[in-house]
Image (cartoon, rainbow over all chains, first blue to last red; front, top):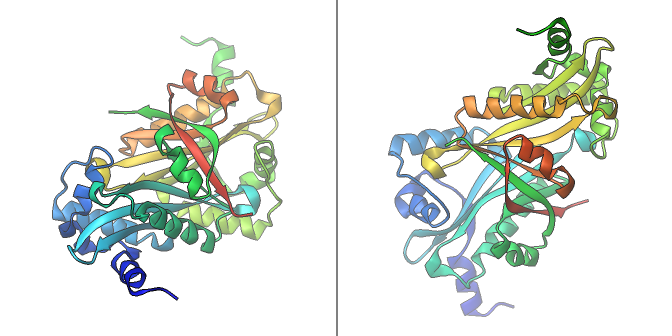
Amino acid sequence: MQNNKDSNEAEAYQVRKLEITDKSKGFMELLQQLTVCDPVSDEEFQNRFEELKSCGDDHVICVIEDATSSKIIATGSVFIEKKFIRGCGKVGHIEDIVVDSSARGLQLGKKVVGFLVDHARSNGCYKVILDCSDDNKAFYEKCGFKEKEIQMVKYFI
Amino acid sequence: MQNNKDSNEAEAYQVRKLEITDKSKGFMELLQQLTVCDPVSDEEFQNRFEELKSCGDDHVICVIEDATSSKIIATGSVFIEKKFIRGCGKVGHIEDIVVDSSARGLQLGKKVVGFLVDHARSNGCYKVILDCSDDNKAFYEKCGFKEKEIQMVKYFI
């Protein structure tokens, strides 16, 4: 049985899908802690939000909102790639995991990754993959991932 | 100016998008050279083909057909992920590159990757990424890619 503190914490840090109003709750500012994230207008945000929404379960962005401050303090995404290999199998790709620097140590990253992994599994993926830096390898190992290949990149800009 | 041999070769090894009739031209057998690729029925193939086609330019599978044998001898895919970071940027993900074992040395892999990279660039991606084994790293470096991160995986089956 959970004690009050645990159940309060569980309630305070629930994972849910991104909502359009999250732009005003610091969602873009949170992403800036991950990488280059230029400001976007409300219209650009809405267009991208609608585009992703039209993918349904094939592309999901989740967030954790701090119930006290109403700020978005963690996020991550997963999209489902449909293949011909493995009997027309599907693969989940996890991207853009970030936890607010003021909310580290609360296991929110693990919670977000768990949510995305469960989403991929329940949507019939045979595996889920992600790319990370050497620094983050240990974290993803704790989430049940294993090192497999090398990520290669080509930049256009 | 190309000589006859060169122009014949260029014609013989053109990259084009996957067509539904490619199943009967050895497309699935080619994928078996890459990984586990269970046989799929014509109906399953058609359903997956239609699903991918509905994504338009956001998910493209290309092939090279040998004009002499009418066999598919090379393939690769790219899908375009839509993000909020980088000013609502887009990233191309290259997957499932394979060249028939009897057609190695003809630079078909480079041709397929070039096609997919061009597709990602012309569709507004700021970068294109892929995961590969250590053995294939040198090949992708020749295609203009650089090593960046570590790929982590979690299998469900």
